[in-house]
Image (cartoon, rainbow, N blue to C red; front, side, top):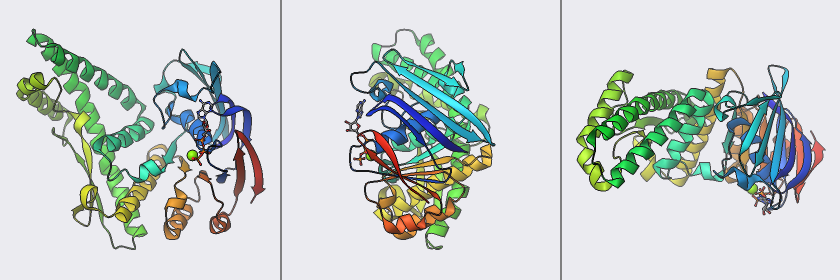
Length: 367
Ligand SMILES: Nc1ncnc2c1ncn2[C@@H]1O[C@H](COP(=O)(O)OP(=O)(O)OP(=O)(O)O)[C@@H](O)[C@H]1O
Ligand SMILES: [Mg+2]
């Protein structure tokens, strides 16, 4: 699958711009603050319905405007499809092939993208929340029902915590929240565990190839409730832990157990890479995870996800850069960079080079 075209109106620093893309490599060059990441962001929202940079959709509307429109044409199984998103101060509306959809979850199964930015290079050493967000983002694309379950879980958790903070007079009310929390929480844990197990199989192979067999990568889903086995057992275990920690929860006004505390353990050669990995090891592991993600989408969806590389290629050494470009010969690539690197340019077999300047995009080279 690939993006064929995007049209931006009042989107960040773009007034009104259309760009036709190459099915393989799109190298987006330009000085700082010209709109390179904005362009990548516009493509990303076509797949996940929200930005990877902000939770506030409104921030994407150009200053002094009331609304913005992003429209893309993408090719999937040789067919043209269209997605349009209008963001106004009040909210957003999305159309897929001309038909309005009511919920973001209905957008998720159309275009698959994987973004890789300098932020993602830090994923191994960052706080657990970043790794949870990574799993959540990917699971939303792989299983749109997960998106709904996660929203639901977050809402119940918020309500439970609000009750805890207010002071619990009525224990039966808390019983009700506990039951719902365990019901949705167990679904989340089950799917996340399955995702991490699958990712583990794929990323180990990739990591071993990148490091010429010198390093063995191992991922494990880490939870403070049971994460193995049948969903019923997971749910019961969660419920039991909620009961046991009820006193402490009330005292602190927070929920101490549940998937909102989970993490991925990342082990390289038997050492916990989150705390003890070298910077190079951590970066390589991040690259392995991203490449595994693309393979997993291919396995589960039968489609090549589109890879958005924002400012990250120049952060990798030549060997890693080549590995990435060689492995992804079937993937549409978007690469942003401030400096055109001739080695990189030579390694591109076919693609377009664009130059972005003050919200205008110009094609400067066809290969
Ligand atoms: N809502 C908005 N309306 C208008 N302009 C905006 C809006 N949001 C961001 N910008 C502008 O967009 C520009 C930044 O664009 P972007 O982040 O795409 O830059 P970039 O080309 O990726 O730069 P860098 O190389 O530094 O990463 C900034 O000048 C910023 O002021
Ligand atoms: Mg940028």
